[in-house]
Length: 290
Image 1 (cartoon, rainbow, N blue to C red):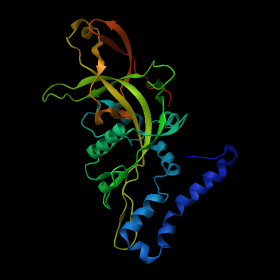
Image 2 (cartoon, one colour):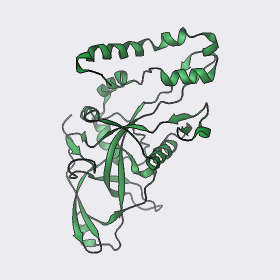
Image 3 (cartoon, one colour):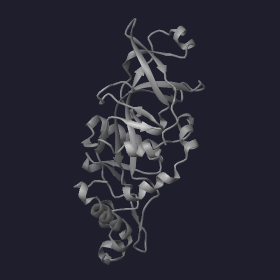
């Protein structure tokens, strides 16, 4: 929630609270000419406060499921959108030292592709391509809230944008690209963390009321660059539980957009191996700090 001055917190909170509570009153008092116009109602719905406002979504922290969250990184058959309910410490850290920024054109394309992949029952349009916008699509804006580190169950996860890069390497479980092969742990370097507001398209039903889809507004991600497989395997490291990678990144695509609930643990990195290779050692996973 944005507040202009610290001393005006109560006033700002109350204004936002009332605007959310009386959202239905706004709809009922609109002229029939507006309520019967899908285009105007779509614009009104996009600009109006909704139950997905931060004042309301903050209450969902009470329904946080610890067991479900801890098992999330290994549930490879589930679809993660970035709007999962996160631990209270994660929600709080995502609002600390935040700066408003805009995705680069390339990174914007990745998140647009990501949404189209995970929300298969919806259509999305690019805010950068006017001809791509239509009444039935949800517009994806390039604006984000940027932050360099995040807390997850007592563990601080940093990024390349942090003052120190210690803690910016992560391990994530993924299904193998080869059919029939066992799932694999993938290592990546977090470039930055960000939250993105996605205003789902609202539809107008015949009686003039606005139907708001049951979807969260705020999505929380890490932008990750994934390391390339080694040029040649080194069984000695694998036997010790370490991972051997080439010190270069895979081509960037929508896989770089990672919901933070998929992060398994931090890893330590050691450079200086032949042919520009690096070794990663997974660190113990913390599950405290709620």
